Image 1 (cartoon, rainbow, N blue to C red):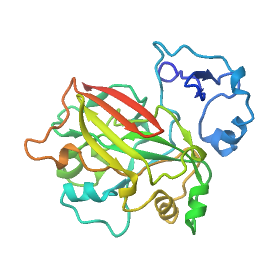
Image 2 (cartoon, rainbow, N blue to C red):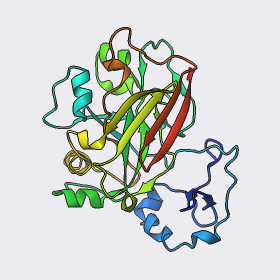
Image 3 (spheres, rainbow, N blue to C red):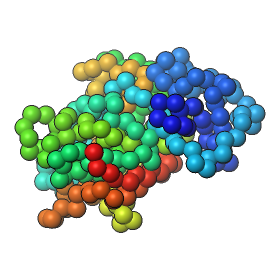
Image 4 (tube, helix red, strand yellow):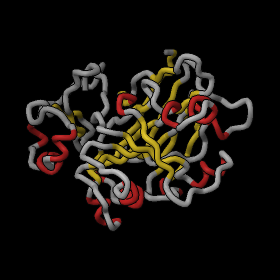
Length: 277
């Protein structure tokens, strides 16, 4: 919670009250996760933590990732709406970590953009080093928790300007993240979560992680064969149908003043007003 770059750690208690963690830990970051910090937090007496007044408080991203690894075309209905064949292996690309902003921060349309799009995604936060994993069980044991991400994308930059997808994915503010890091033990089945996104109050995406081509465990296991995943790394696991790219012409790409609301069951809700860079 707090101004960009000056956030303080907090937790949400069972009664929905915000509790100040700044007297207990410095930050929720890679070092904290690597030192099994989430497990240590279970020993804290929550009722003794100060209650924060949420009025007027900015919610920042729950952590700043080391890297963001993204999985493309990972929902069957999204592949169908874009006319793409289902991948036989996960489609992998990277997104710049400095795209991360708070869940309610402004999303900026890049200069020269006419095709800025939205994508609600389940984000997986890595809690321990993942290297050459051999099973789903090993993969899930490396997951610290889950969060909501909006994988904002510029489709012309991504698909029509040559090269790789990264330049359509890495514009500033293109990864609103949070509001919470929900620990893995609080998400009994990451393949049974409903994802929704509204634009100006109109429901545009309404999907379920059951529709993933490659589930969370397989994505983590697969990625560990090609790169080392470290504590604090984030995986955006793909988006369901309903993006602007998949709509009939004229496609309803974002314009300044649009309002995005993004939600995943049990993980919280985001709200962004779209601005112009």
